Image 1 (cartoon, rainbow over the protein chains, first blue to last red):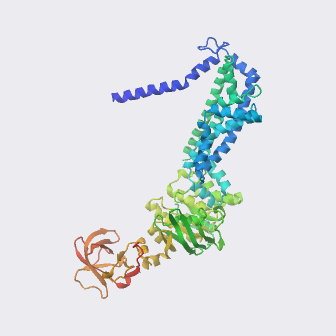
Image 2: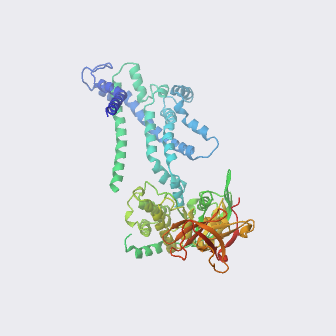
Image 3: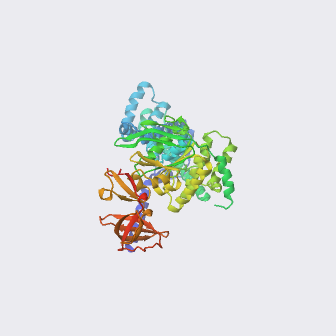
Length: 268
Length: 357
């Protein structure tokens, strides 16, 4: 009994410590963002919202944010389409070089981002794609596709192919079968993949640093230079807002799941 | 379910009745790397017939059904349905209903939407769809459960929804791949009767796949026995049971006593088949009916089945013989009792022995 209690106690302590460790940056960032000081300072001395105002009044920040959103949306759309198609080919396809294709599709996760950034920079400089939305979208999509592929192929592996056979025997052609049967069944995983894709793009610094410049920048690059060039507390304000947005995204995903479960339970 | 459904059900069913079409399977061959799954099978299924493809696992029965449905393409041979060659037609244009062992209901749709799915693919007016879905659900006595999700139904109910979905569009024929395999015995027997009723009332051609010989005997107009991809014998249940063409069929359908070898008067490559219910037991030395063949043995085991007894008799050569007899027969068998097992020669069938290999 005593050992059991001890085990439980130490487990709780371990969990709490791990959780604290993981969210520690938040405890630094949020108070700092409300500090009335021209430096990133911790602990904060006086309360102020001036860095939030600074964010909204600086067109550089606003443009970077809009760019990031725009790039993120395009990346999400493209990588969901490409990644789902790739996952289908990898799970269902029967062709000789399948292992090679899988390796190539997943390669961007394994190759260090610095190398990708450098290589892309060299090529994009020549063809004029640096400092362009298209350039960012192309690179981020390559980075995001593996996340969609991993999510969707996991769902496809556990998907019962007989459902597709049933649909076809009932008169649905391949396209209708995919849109009406397969896609709705794997939709949660596609959505998860989409979320990952968006965050991958929205969060990307390493390759983006190579592509960004005075004309076109993204939010993470702007934050990075904000810290590097002058220690600008606006970064803390932006971080806090990003935290809120992320939290809202995941909370709404959770709510949707909860709502679905409730509705199912109610009918039963 | 409710008592007054019988009349409404039959009118519903007649409205869904199809016209039976013939299915011709011509020299179909399907090979996989190391094995021949379907070995040159030719079979003609009559319009409106209930034909069962019977075989153990690996006999090629499911492969053959999937070739008919169009999910597997044959290496050679042809499939004709209603006189039209469908060999190269994709499954979604074959107009054949299909029922799967594990129901294959769409989990993200309600029961109603599952059944409406084939109708919506056929661009039928909304009112028509509603009417026919309701009718099909009434036929399987699930008219009140349309709003449920498939996962909220029992296995038997799910399979009934699958049946409704497969008949609602009045397909040319209905293909069923071990549809009762996932259900327990009582439910299975109940659904067997329902499927028989559906077949009778719809008049559609049914092709049914099973490994269960009792199910095949109980349901089919004709049974096609498959073994290692090849067709062994086709016939009505009575033909197959009473006049099996080979030892394999005799042993696969029902119980049988097999005698081989010259000391039983059987030629090489042949076997003598005697069904247990035709074997009678008498006391050793008592007068046997004239002309009866007999072997002496000792009762080894007696099993009370309710409707009768199943008696195992050990023979001098170490083999044993199975008989079925009435509970209150002339002789009360008990283990250790020496008996004479005998039968009329007309019940002893000489068949080809195809199990040697």
